[in-house]
Amino acid sequence: MTRVIGAVMIVAAFSLSGAVKAGELRARARRLSALVSALELMRCEVVDRLAPVPDIIERLAVSGPEASRCFFRQLSLEIAGLGEREFSEIWSSCVGTLDLRHEEAEAMRGLGRSLGRYGAAEQDGAISRCMALLESFAAQAREEAAAGTKLYGGLGVTVGLLLAIMLI
Amino acid sequence: MRSEDGFNRAAALLPQEIRAAAMALPGNVKARAEELRLRAGREVFVCLADGERALGCRKAEVRDLECVLETATRASAHTALSATAAGFVTVRGGCRVGLCGEAVVKGGTVAGIRRLSAVSLRIPREVKGCADAIFDRLTDGGFRDTILVSPPGAGKTTLLRELVRRISENGARVALIDERGEVAGVWEGVPELDVGRRTDVMTGAPKGEAAMMLIRAMTPEILAADEITSPEDVEAMAAAAGCGVRLLATAHAESAGDFASRPIYAGLMALGVFKRVVTIKKRGAVREYEVEEFVP
Image 1 (cartoon, chains in turn cyan, brown):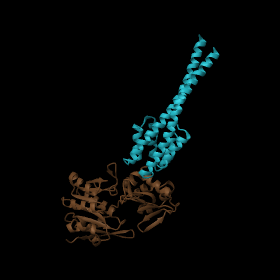
Image 2 (cartoon, rainbow over the protein chains, first blue to last red):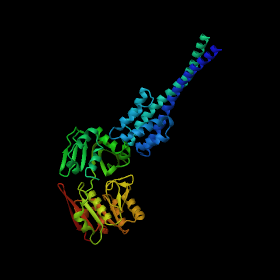
Image 3 (cartoon, each protein chain N blue to C red):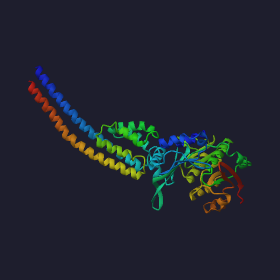
Image 4 (cartoon, rainbow over the protein chains, first blue to last red):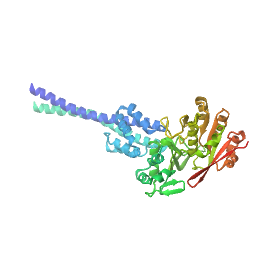
């Protein structure tokens, strides 16, 4: 009986770790998609309404896509230091708090070097470029998540079962 | 506002290294400074009444000009560059950031500025008492419609602010059209520069609309406006003159004769809108005021 319980626990543990890994992949895809949506809102506010960047950030921190709110909340706090630090530095340090891969973080940092510093047309270009990059990373992440869900889910169960069989 | 406050606020917009050099200036220089000027690839200057003086720090770079604009606009340069073709943005405390660079022309008119080549930070200054020499003459027997004239940078806005303050403190209800936010430096509804206890300030709106709104809503005895420069401004003054308020305004002109002879002001002269002119003459650091009556 103890062996059966142990085997079930092993299978459950490995299945869970597989699910966690697959969940991480899905979360990354969600985070990137949320950032793309937030940047699209930002682009509209900058280009169509000529809204000030701090106001946009504050709005996104409260009512932006949920997975991006934490980033904008941090940004809305740190933007108080504008003047002592350039906006690109503030933006970059907040990007550092996001769980992004190197090339994704670099795309965001590149945007920070243009955001708020030039005319609406230039910012439109910079935001659109960053969105295109993040969208491609998001698409890739979604594919990885879809594949990973099956892979890690299946792998977890299989490894768990194998171990359980060996132990029994 | 203390005499150095305006300087400190303007200096706060500078990049750190240049700001440090500006803040290291002696107190008497800070108190007299009228502008800070950054030109790409050249030294940074502080402008005093008797000329420009190098700050003695490194040369300004394009990046520094962008940094000034970024700080002045709270990281929202697009609100200044795209929304206005006027070439300046006014920041907290009435500090005006003048922009120079490549103009973007759309439909035959300047739509904005890009690729900055120079930036000037005009330091707002309250000079309480600067109108003492002319105040009694302007108010004896009741205030009459008055225009203040001088070339740019001679102190029209400073004199206007002080006259508004004095008139307001004397008991008259004044409405001030502060289109560019330089006269009163309103921040979150409160004027940061003293324009008197009985002064109502309308910021941001074009003079024509603001004048009528103020006359209808705030029933002023005196309507004040800075820089009558466009045909729309002239129309606004002419329209307001017929509404029973006294006018106090400023305009670019060398003298009363120069003002009267300019085609743009011909309508105002023909209608006899302004009864008096105060000409500001700048001799070094000293301003002299000459009051004349317009003869109908």
